[in-house]
Image (cartoon, rainbow, N blue to C red):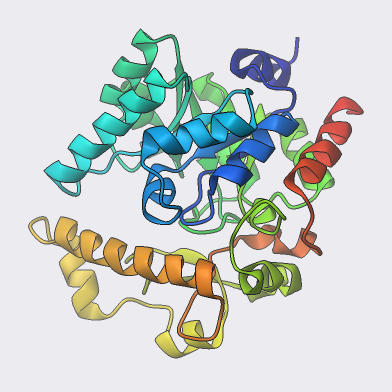
Length: 326
């Protein structure tokens, strides 16, 4: 049995394909459609609650009314505030109560999530961009790593898929490639590289089931790899977005005072929180209302392989056929 087959068996899915959690684009219909087609959709709780108007339990119930296939859950565990941390702990336990057994952690120490999930027979993968964060995640007990590379949308990494594989393969845990997969060819190349699965986001925004505004979907379909730029003005660290007039006017680099506040031990958490609140509001507005105002669209370099809006099930089926023929 190949490593990919072991991954799909452990998760109870047909194809080693994850629809990554996306704020604000992880609406219930999209998450369900990917799981129903044989991949696995990952619930993004902030998106579910504050964009799509569901409390977590009712939102999961809605997704489960559309599919009885396995689901994932995204736990952002940065300690930005005690209130946020308490809410995420509650959300993780609700997801477990509702039968979710695949969790993806990011931005903090995953040990408490691992403890809760392992006690219920689940598995935890952790988002990483380099070996330092991979080792910290493994110290926290995670079962595998989501390797976010330089081709990803949103908070991209700094290293290529090839470099990340070389850097992390000796850790002897399953590695998932996240970033730059827009076509079946990209998918198979990453699996042949040694990754057990891929995680896609940008490709699934341009689907019928995603309720992002048509302007967002069209921007992805029209964009080329050269249209993707990194800006620090959204969260203080580089974020991959489509280069729009607003991005050009805003600039790509954080100001010197922003950098100072982000580097200071006493102010960095407050600065990150301020960035998060601003970007959450702007992303929600861009996704729902389109591009008739100041906006930005997160996307990765996989845009070059996305040429039309199609159903999520068609995407999963095409990739699944390529996997079966591999």
